Length: 262
Image (cartoon, rainbow, N blue to C red):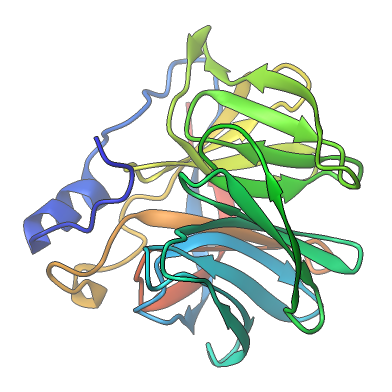
């Protein structure tokens, strides 16, 4: 199946929003729901692929050939204050900041870009093998995934691979790992085409928790044939705030996790 599909009708969106599709949540692994703290405006044309929070702003990478970009966004209003558009043959994917630079993956072209973090000037490109889906970092290593159950760890200076882990749930590989965020020593990962976020132990690859985001975007906020799946996690470490959104969603949400009863 092609990775990026914009759903053709409203019922498909509803099915993805409210169904229990995707990885099961077996007994013994904690599960979480959410409480919405605040809803912010989000560009409904932004096909969100990468997201992070830094210095009071959101940084977002958008996908689709001919529509891909990296952008700096004012959280409170959704205003785009800086933007760089990719050439139309590139499908933008995950982004991550490292010191004074920002790195971006592309989907199937095996080419990434290095930007000046302040100006968004393209400094150079780099190559990697396979598809590029998402980026984050743990303060020492850049963390990357490619839609498979594998997560790669890269040297942040050379962008060379250091190691990999395979993400598993009760011993079974978890495929379709999508947008990533490093939160309090864990890797949070959207699972593509589901409303679930996996909490992953970076040492073992084991899923240590599931977050069920079903119902986050209300039917009233969905546009038939336009609104797509949940994707995008950002974390404000200073204020301990988690933000989530989706592809072509009109809203971005600040949430708190709520542990479900077992």
